[in-house]
Image (tube, rainbow, N blue to C red; front, side):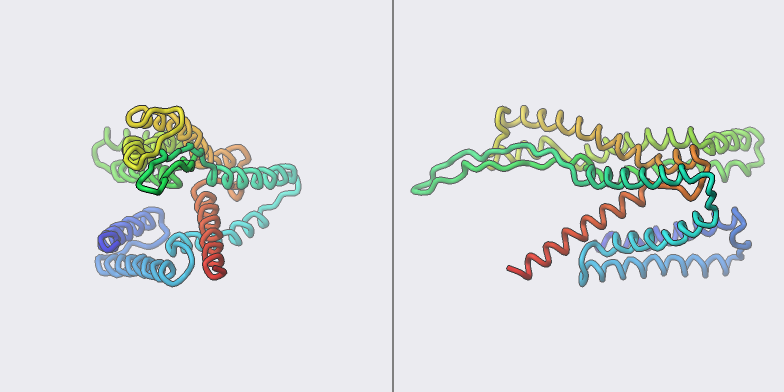
Length: 310
């Protein structure tokens, strides 16, 4: 945790500088001199570090993960502005579209909750052992494999990979070398196409879901631990056969989770492209974060209530 805090400080300064450069390029803020840029970078970085400290205080003295709750609060705080934008552009002629959108929002949210909580139980039985006068083991339990093992991490990775080339091409588009400038402009126009961007986004999310799951879940280690504790999967030999079995199940589960994350990620882009209404957007990272935080918060509150009762 301490290393994470140390790493947050330089990252905050780098992102503050990039944020200000992006705002200047889009004409949101005027051109800043060296002292103005330095002051604003310090202000933005200090705000990020302050939020990190507040988040850790919430985690220590409150209920749930503090940083996640802060992100959740930021997302929820933006809902009134989105609703006001929607109300301002309301068109009675598109009422069927609005009704269909509301129904889709309910179905999509229910689907996100279902997939987030879904898991595949792998039955595990502990061998019966006799030690002296005691009989140990012989119980059956299960190993839960979540459908969405990676959470929102693949979406964040995919966004980073997509945004980084855009930043590079934006800098190269201003090059004095005509060939570099023309290639950069062509790539920027290509990425500006909504359907190409959505397709690349979907493929990257699916790929990163498999990558992150492979990094965080090791079937060989799980199989070794089960074998050492005298446990086995019924109908599967301990050791390598168990690791292969877990790998096969995990690959099929990850396919469902990866397709789910990819569809949720590109859903806002697809809805905006089909309807042409910018205010209509259900899905994306925000919905996954909100659902995950609410479910986690409810579980933490239930655990606190149960602890106080007993």
